[in-house]
Length: 204
Image (tube, rainbow, N blue to C red):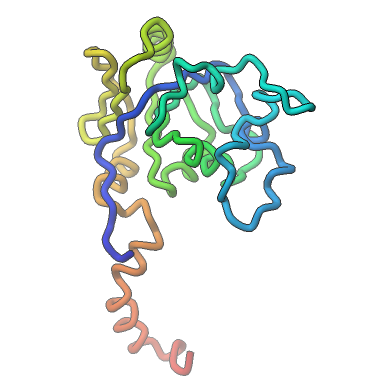
């Protein structure tokens, strides 16, 4: 548990989730947030977009056999993805559906932070680049999309796209310090040693 986990690169079949301002209530409706753990949230991701009130499947990209190959996936999105309430369940639902990284025009700040806290790289690119990438995927979806955190590139079907990952976030992913719990556990001895010299900790 104490070993830090570096995230240098993520590869997976891409899925284009088109649309601006896709909020967290659409990603995981509030009524599914009663669970104590995040187990099972994957099958509920975009539930109301994917199913009718009677549970019948709708025409949705997450039901399109071209985009639901088994294994890891990478979501390609548009502007202001993950806006709305700051529920951690949103990235958790995407992660459990298989999405291990995202690339888009812009992301809501808290959603972005919640993704990074789960080791999910989130990259941005300008609107023209995202549109070109989405079209390439929709025209020929049978390839993996690779997000290279270190090189700051996204590669699909032999073409490389420049992406933006802030320096601090990039460093966290590469060093494994994105996982705050692992960082604390890895430094447990130093924490205990420091605590010995703090008078207000005595007795706790």
